[in-house]
Every structure is written in C-alpha cells, then in structure tokens.
Length: 180
Image (cartoon, rainbow, N blue to C red; front, side, top):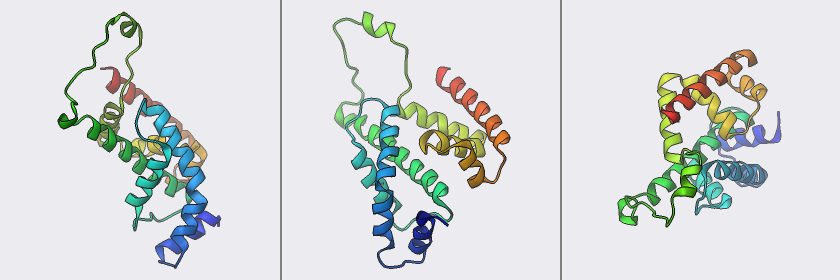
C-alpha cells in the first residue's frame, strides 16, 4: 500500500493531521496537474496554486474511497470544475461577457484554427457523460488526470484493450461534438 493510499484511508477515518500530511505530500503533483489543465485551457487569470487551493477546499470532507489513482481522477475532475466555474464567472454579463473583442485587422485571426474554449469542452464532456459514462470517466482520468491506460484500467477494473477502444470512441465523439 502506498503512502498516499494509507493517508487517504487515515483521512476517511478522520485521524488527526492526516489531511495536512496528505496535502503536503500531494501538493507538487496537484500543482503539476493544475499546470497541465491551464495549458489546455488557454489564457487565464488563474494560476496553478490558486487552482490547487480552490480544488482542495472543494474536496474538504469528500475524500473518495480507493487508491492514489482514484484520488487523482477525482482531483482532476474537481480542478476542471474550478476552471470552468472561473471561465463562466469571467464571462458573466456584469463583467462585459456579452461583448466581443474587436481587433483592427481580422486577417491574422482568420488564419488561425478555431480552438474550443473551456466552456465548449465542458459541454462536450457533459454530452459524452450522458452518452457513455465509462468513456467520460476514462477521458477525465487520462486527459485531465494524466494517468496512463494501465493505471486507469486498474482503477476502473477493465482491460487495457477495452480502454483503448473507449479512448478512440471518446476522441471521435468529442471531435464530432466540438467541430460540428
């Protein structure tokens, strides 16, 4: 049993100091995970530390059962929700969210490929969850949690070939949803 798994079980048993030790142990990995989320989300006013702290506060009292892999899958989903909430807040009408930025020349923008923003990705993932909950869970763990197929297979209790099929199907679904 890894130290993280042991600390997770101590947290679930409400042992004194276990949450603090767990946070200190996980902080570097959670920060790396937050940087990876931010890199995929485009320009943002959040920094990795803010995401980790907000996600940790949202996880307060909600330590998921299981292992290190399950915890990082859960933490990744919480971080994604922190980013989506931040984007929604920034896009609120009271902050001018309905206004479009205007450039002097749009020629440079026309040459750039369109990229999906955090809200569009969240909508696509919500649609995937409705269509295929297992594929959605796998995408969160792989894309947002940075877990390998082998780690995900262990957490989900399915084979790696099954996950590879789910991964191909999920990517095709998300591509169709975001490009259509």
